[in-house]
Image (cartoon, rainbow over all chains, first blue to last red; front, side, top):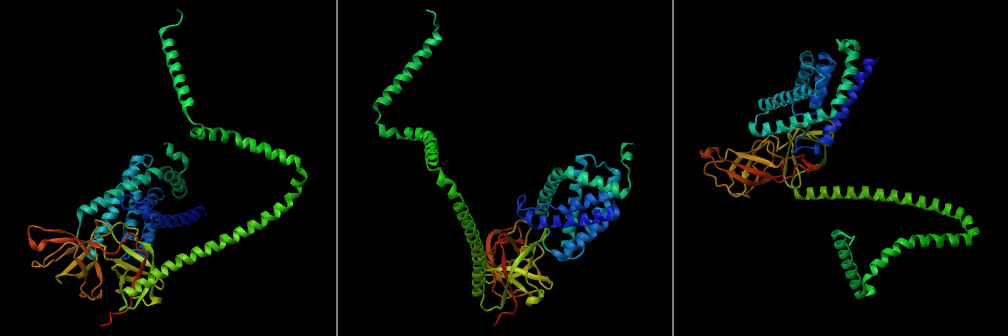
Length: 177
Length: 275
């Protein structure tokens, strides 16, 4: 029951993030560049809850986003699903208690996601490849995402550990050993 | 002397200040320092007013209490009227904004009379930094089909990428994967215009013929080739010409006529232009 409610909660948070991203962050930008909250969100699910839910939610949310505003259906789904999937492996390798680690993971994921999206766009739709403007946009976006992660870190950690205990059946003791 | 040197100096300074003050005050007309009067007045007058008010109230205290009921009723009445007025004000504001939008539509339609168009609002923008698609609030129901041209008061916006019942996704000309076949207004040379990642108002013109003469501020419009955009729709003006070593590689930056940052309403061209 609690798991079910958490899943409903995740879906509601997704919609909140969607409205934030498509309204608030279209004018609250750094030099016209928006952050990508979905990467942070799916990464959090992957890191704390696990690869299965991370992948499924990433895929579904990505496809939904593509249907709403995207040019081609599926690529956001695949990339977000990938991030959700990799989350669990990152969890096993790195500590989630370190703010720096989380920031680095967010930065890398954002870079991987955007490079994937851009590469796919060039392959499918053509157009001029502009390396320098792309890197500029990517860097600003990464910085924006990292700043948001720093601000939201306590929230992410609290909600994340709550969900982790629920889904991975980890007792609170295991964290002390 | 018991006074030391320091106190002596202070005494002298104080004396000089008093002297100067006396000189100033004695030579000043009373009218010129009325602001000081004002300050003192403003300190005293509220208290004075309060005391006078209290005195008057005590003198006629019987009428004070009987008036309360009347005042209460009056207050209620005024509140009611106020809310009614606020309501009508809100209605007026809605009508005003509607009127502005409709006026905009009329202007838009007048500008391109040869096309049958339908107006639409932009309801969503792309959430990705690398693609520039927009979603409008008109769809299949209104007769919109993929590949139809979308314009605005100032010029070309893009084309319809896909449609649903009530919405349509539009790929704008500033999207990096959009190419528009266009002509230079002065020389009628054909060029290809692409979107760039640089910013939301710059396009890049490539495939410029080697013998073409490029002039800054020359206007660029659609050529009608390629099967999507009708001929003669304004795109923008040439902002900067970049010459490269090889003349076949030269390119130019074009400033879009449409301000994509502030774009709110668009027109979708439903038919082919009437020849």
